[in-house]
Image (tube, rainbow, N blue to C red; front, side):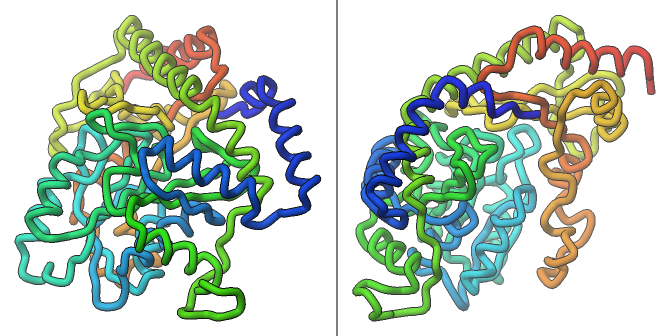
Length: 387
């Protein structure tokens, strides 16, 4: 599914030099390397401030808490995302309200959000938390209009989307604040856990920096209850090196995605998806990822809709071809979130996606012959094992 060694080989001397430089300074927590990376990452996102932290999960919490989201508030987000999207809302003391996804992009649906906001019970909604899933920005035109209409804040869950754009504007600059993850599988990845909040608000920046260090603005004077979520200097140094290569790596991901598209079409496997959750999945073909023309996709994942998904995955695994399911169970059906009061059938587009999505290998250094092998195996599955 991933081969980190290919991109690492090209930058190994730079990475080791950067790590050695941190070791020489003996400043390992929030040192100069962190400040340098924060500034560079913020510039890359067209944001005024970058606040490094320990993980993408912490970044979500920091972004919302620093923006003032807490007890008595509600935040609207998607049920089709990684668990941290909702758990971070709960960690703030707020209430997650879920709305279904757009069945074509898999991102939070503005229409579904608008329907939620028409309900009188939505009076406590303070913010929208769209997720830029798989590396494609959510519909920020529509969400900005909703934000203005209802006087809400917009926090971006950009964990999978460093380098993505919407109408030429980078992810991380599209709302009051944004949260990024640098988990090792991400397009911009650390050598462990790390995260970042971006914002152009001086107030959010100042409070996020306090919250990540136990609520301290002055050493050993704690103005509020914060957390220990500081970015290590070694991780920042690694990220600073990789940040310089990220535009080329993201370009390569787009090239790989286009090649997959072409190969699936040449194999006669690509079919049209109507986006209607009532429609059955195609019996023999695959639905290719859709890119909104207003978006600059960074293809953190290349995700198909496929029939007989679990059988196909077993077939690929037997041929030593990696794949993954992001995500097999929507958040509203997770055991730990039953108290939110949702049930099967509440979000049909999310539930259908959970049953059909399959992510294929995509990473810098993936070869054309390897992509051909993946597509040929999928063609063989549907040819040799018809429904």
